[in-house]
Image (cartoon, rainbow over all chains, first blue to last red; front, side):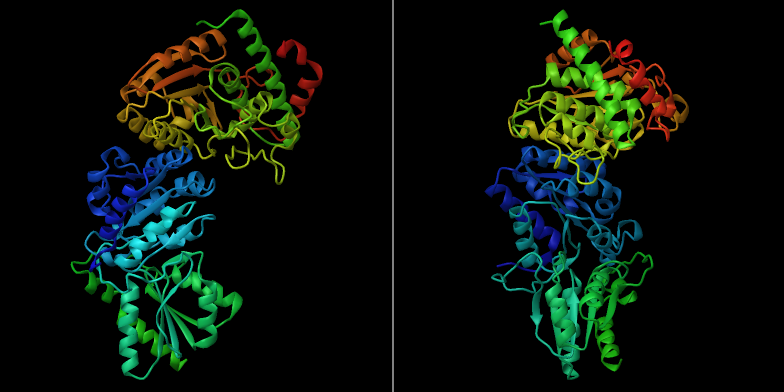
Length: 312
Length: 279
C-alpha cells in the first residue's frame, strides 16, 4: 500500500526496484543523494552508483557516455541545476543523439520554499520541452511517480522528469493506467476543465470540490506528461467545456500553460487561464503552503480562475 | 613492439592522402575548419590505421575501442580517416555539410558510421568519453577510449570536471590527447586564455602526462604504447602540433581556424603544389 510521501522518496525506492530487475540500471548523482533519494540505490548497489560531485554538466555527459556503452543511466540533481547548469549537455549530448539517459530532477517549483530562488526550479518545463527528442514528465503523486519511473526505464530514449520535494498525498489508485503522453482524468465535468501537473493536481482536486459546492462542474486532468502533450485530451476539453485552467508550480511562461495554449490556439481556440508563478522570482518561505498561497499557486487561485472563466 | 619503418612510411603516406581529402571536402562544402583538422590528422591516422581495435564492417561492435573527437569542429579529419578505413564510401566525403548528408558539420553518432559520440559543443565530448570508460568498466569490457581535445577546448570548465572524475574513478582505459596547436578562433591561445603549463594541470588532476611532437609517428607510437601499459590512472598525451600542418601557406596562421571567405589560396595550393607538400 502506497502512502503519502514526497515523490522524490518514491523515486528513490523505485530506483532500487529497477536496480533489482535490471543490472544495466546505474545512477549518477551530483552530491545531493540524500535529497534526491538516490542514496537508496547507492546503499543497495554501491558499485552501480556514481558521484560526479558538484559538477552537473559532467554528470549528464558521463551518463550519456555510459548510455552509449549500453547502460541505462539515471542522473539526478535539482531541477534548477539539471535544466540550466547541465542544459546543453542534455540537449547536445543526450537528446540530439537520442541516448538512453533518464534525467530525474527534484525540488521542482517554489514549493521547496526555504532555500529561495537559487533552488526553486521554475523554468525547467519551459526549457526542457523546447528540446527535440526529449520526453518530459511531471507526475503528481507517489503512485504515478512509481509508475512513471518504471515506464521511463522501459522506454528507449532520453527523458527529463521533475519531482517535488514536499510530501505528496496519494491521488490515484494503485491499478491506475499510466501511459506516457496520456493525461489521467480524475474528475469528470462539463463547465470547465482544470489541467494540472505535479503538486498542483491535488490543488486542482481541492478547487473542484469547492466549485462543486457552488454547482460548478469541473473536469480535472492529471497532466503527468508535458511532452509529448496529450493533444486529444486538450482538444476534447476545449470542445466540451467552456474554458481551460492550467495549474503548475512553475512560471506561467512556457510551461504547462504555454503547452496547452499552443494546442488550443492551433486546434480548437478557447479561453485558457494560467495558474502558476506569474513571471516573477519568488521569495524564500518558511512554510511551503503559505508561500504557494502568497503567489496564488493553490486551490483557491484555481477556483478563482474557474469562476472568472465562467463569467467571461 | 616498436613500430616498423614500413609502418611509419604507410602511416605517413596515408596521412598525406587524408590531408588532401580534408582540404578538398572543406572546399567543396564551402565552410569548415582546415587548421585544426590538419594539426590532428597524424594522430587520428595513427589511431585508426595502427592502434585501435576496431572493425569497420561492424561499427557498433560493443567491444571496439572508441575514438571521440571532442574538438568536433575538426570533423573533416575524422571523416577522412573513417572513409579511408572503410566505414563508408569515399564519395560521401564530397557531401560534407550538405542538406541531409551523413556527414554533418560536426560529428553525429546517429548519422555517420564509425562516429562513437556526437560532439561539437566543446568539452562535452570529453566528459562523454569519461562516461564511456566508466561504462566499460561496469560492463567488464576491455575496450579502450581515446578522446581528442583541443588546447583551446581545455578552457572549458567541464573538461576539468571530467578530468577530476576520470582520475577519481581511476579510469586507466581512458587516453586523452591534447592537440596543442596553440591557436584558437580569435588568435593565439597564449593571448586569448593561456593554458600552459598543460601537463602540470593534468598531473595535478591525477593523470599521467606525456608530451610529444604530434606529427612524429614514431614518437606518437611510443606515447600510445606507454599509455597502454599504465594502470590505475587515466593517461594524457599532450601533442605539440602545427595548425594547418602540411600547407605552408596556412601553417600556424589563426586566420585558417575556419575557412576564410575566399578559399582561392587553397584552390591554388591544391592545383599547383600537391606533390611537394604531400610527398
